Image (cartoon, rainbow, N blue to C red; front, side, top):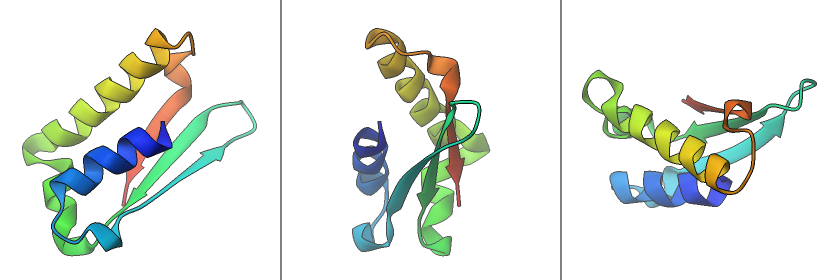
Length: 79
């Protein structure tokens, strides 16, 4: 999932080198995907009223469900 999120975010920003995507697993077995971009590009990634961020979340949940994974275990944080 990390590679998918990284690819999508890199398509949205101008400075592709500033994109950092990491995945952490907490004690409950949930995965937190942290997306870090330059401060001036965060608005593009999140989008107006959070529409881009929501679309990325929907894609990740859909891919998880399609691959037989529990989609509720994936959380995406934008920083």
